[in-house]
Amino acid sequence: MKLKLDLHDIYNRGDEIERALRAIIDEAVQKKAPLVEIIPGKGSGQLKKRVLRFLDRKDVKALYHRVEKDSDNFGRVFVHFRWK
Image 1: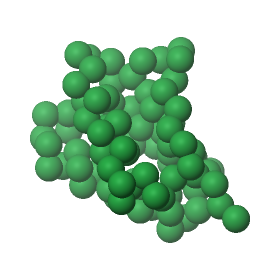
Image 2: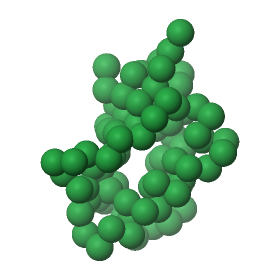
Image 3: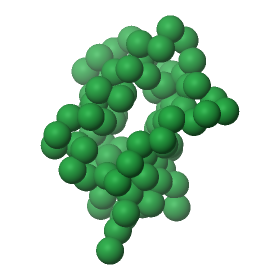
């Protein structure tokens, strides 16, 4: 089971981006999903930086195992979870 969040539609609405990121991480925790795919898109890279900053917050970082930047597609980030 993989959850997916595409940020193309809300790229310019900061508060909605935060809410969407928080919601997808919370959903992954609730459903014990092993993987979340976040698509900030290619663009200037600012949205991807924002996503990575969000994922680097201490409260969020405690929830997942690791972040993988897709080497084939700059506009995609994978968040891996490890469940016991």
